[in-house]
Length: 117
Image (cartoon, rainbow, N blue to C red; front, side):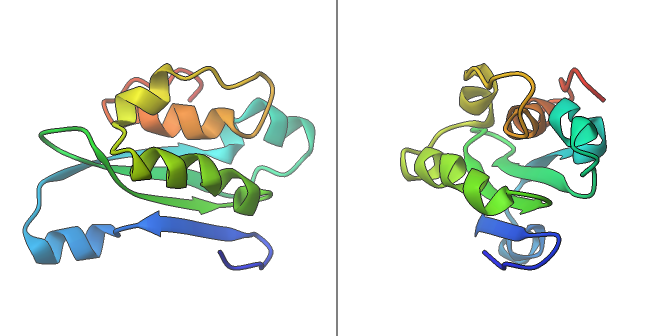
């Protein structure tokens, strides 16, 4: 985590690392501009980005930029410890309206299924 404004939080691999490995992956991204809580608080800068294995859907990396992301990254740290898939995260309930919904929407968007964009 980097405590800046906006905050930065990351876990796992980057796209550049996966490209260098020759590993097939897919990406889901979700802007805070489309997140209800971010809109309510007038803090829409940033995004959630999920990188998953193209074949197994296992989450390989997550990169967050925006308000409170240092508090949100923990969900993905635990998920990755248990080899969760993007679909696993997408199936978990995230309360509305919260910033954490962006985590779910980014996971859903790995397969182009985000609902709030």
